[in-house]
Length: 327
Image 1 (cartoon, rainbow, N blue to C red):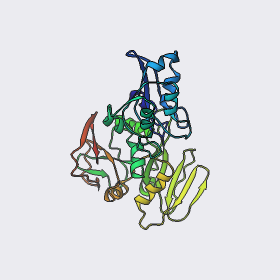
Image 2: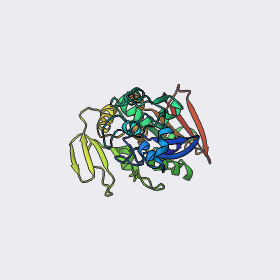
Image 3: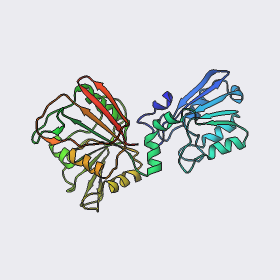
Image 4: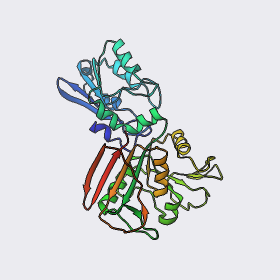
């Protein structure tokens, strides 16, 4: 699991996968899926074994069922059979219809001892973005906002930063891990946020903006940007304009577009109105809420989520981060 997490932000839309090769209770090889389109975890783990003759009496552990089909790379199940590894331990089955137990069946038919379901719950949580994309045909959706001590999202006029510097750094870490960040036109007009990860190296998320007019965004950086609008569908360098037909704009339609573009996760950092659209449509998986010590006394009321008992609270200096999971 720890090896798999090293692929965070680099392998989407593929899952994060880690693998370890063990001989006589000693780790002789390890690997993980490092970058989309490149070698999978099992390949890297097997390649790292110096004495390949040991593989015929070894066990390979993998956090997700080995791939069965030819994609960007050859099937990992065939590599395991090629090296005659006699025992395979798998945390979770791959729900992709191209795999979905086929590799397990092929291994067992060849006489390989296969165990499935070791730390399955942790493995499913590790790849919640991937599994949601496959099973629900949409991205995994995270709603994020900060609210004042007295329950306000923001002042009626002007700006006031509610969360603290440590919370801001954590937000940028989330940006480093997800595929896309989404905001609405009001946030674009009032804050003009960069929507980039400026604290962590590597991955930059795709910007997604809801702008009915299609002419508000003036960004000049090279980050891929998708603008949902009501006028045009066209591409201009790094910007893709997608014309949404539904009036008002349907968040379901927008998420379908993102799914077709292989975006597996979205962090909604928009204003209260945008977040409320997702809540009303019941189209979300987690909510990250910074509860601050600031009192606004009046302003825009914060979105409300009630009735979910699966909550985690983390203290971050003078902020409390409340994480709510829908399922």
